[in-house]
Image (cartoon, rainbow, N blue to C red; front, side, top):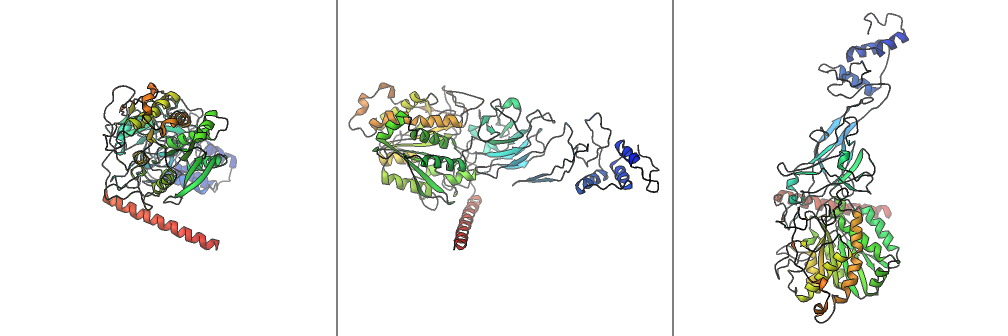
Length: 591
């Protein structure tokens, strides 16, 4: 209790003053007076906090500590008390959408206080917009997906890929007792809203092991995708932390790309080549494996940068091809030379795009001019321009374009049925490819796909159609799921990078089986194994297992905006100008 006659005129009694402060039960302003009388000077941050607490309107906060008898007034913020620990916490959030700047300098936090959550995506392939961080365990952290650069040909801004870091998350075992909740608003306005049912988002504590969040929930009524960080919702995790990364699928970073490129280039079987530069000045890397084999097998991945499954697939294939202890790989390289582009879209990958490059081009629609839309061009789609030029120079006998599909929860092939040249030969080759893949790896299936294009109506601006038509060869688009694989489900982990790699490695078995037929003369299909017979696939959807299917989403159409398109063009020109200035500066420094 404060003694009202304890003034500076009385002799200073340190023991008595300490006793007064330890048993203090007055207001914050009384505490300031007591400390002033005792000649006590606080650090600036603590003095500021106490002044805020002493201001009019400050309400005493409840304390959960049964042994604490202090008055805790923190200007409306319940942030605990000073028990001899100097725990100063600065909560500053700098986000593109809203800035949440709170200077909450305080001491030891009692059980029951909610830690602030920080969200950041300023790194390779990062993508998220932050709307509200104020109620992490109640209404949740409110987020939105940042759109790609506007796509002129399709007249829309794609978005669906997200990847961000969250710091200060709670799995339900922390003091607050409630797990952190995350909500992506306007998920119904993403490119493929019909993909959200049965989606489980990916999470990682170390950015190497990615597991699934099983309480991921799609609410069609309010257009949100949400999940909690409850421990029970991620049983696949083998560790725990208050720092976690979330993503639509496990990312494959540009650093991983560089590391793997270096590993492959060390093999005497590999010749590395840069086909050209992207719009952001990055290398478009080609890895040629073998050289004596006359059959030219091309495998490319990640035309759509958000489909990181594709680069894992290429990693698995290339790892097996350069393994000198793999007998089948060595045998295949006697007859085949492989041309592999692990990442067709480096710029979009690093920028955190779903489907486009730096200029907003959907590369899988850039393989031929469409009406007045010229493609490919060095100004908009140099990645396709350089690849097609190399293909024309060396030839193609077999082609696989690797992707990831947002909706259909399984691996499948989109084939050549719409080509002008579709007939017994191409039909037999496609049948051999699909069926031998199913036999090589049970994660593959051949019953479900997209609805095949009508006869002789293939869109030749799509990569596999263009290559198949141009080179009269076996040419397919290979799709992998973002979700768990319905044919071989594993809910806690879903479709994983390791399974992508193993599926890619199975291409060696498929090529070994198909190679004798690729350029065979005569009606070879008449004597082929009956197990290789072509089967027309059925249409898949987000809820497909292997039963009846419904209609597939044709992608959200409500994002067209001439104003956005104009700004995207201005931004691209500004970025190119910055790149030119940097190059000029570098030359001056060098000289």
